[in-house]
Length: 84
Image (tube, rainbow, N blue to C red):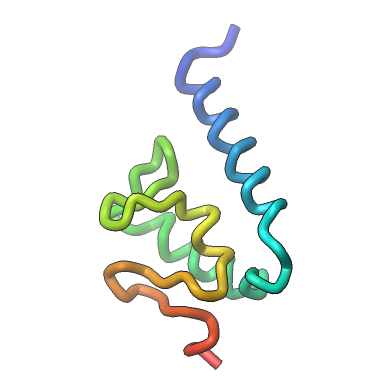
């Protein structure tokens, strides 16, 4: 039987993937940019790991890192258009 934490992690992962799947391609940053952003966020001291949310902005970072126009609230990464 699953422990509560394992169930919560599975639900979080399913919700994150569903959200990423419904974002239109025109709003998404390229996969390499999203991966670099997530790498930065996943090692950030402001990431609340149980929900993968940012303690500064409250966003779910697995989702936010995929958005072109998103930016880190403490300037660790910027909007995709500005990176070009």
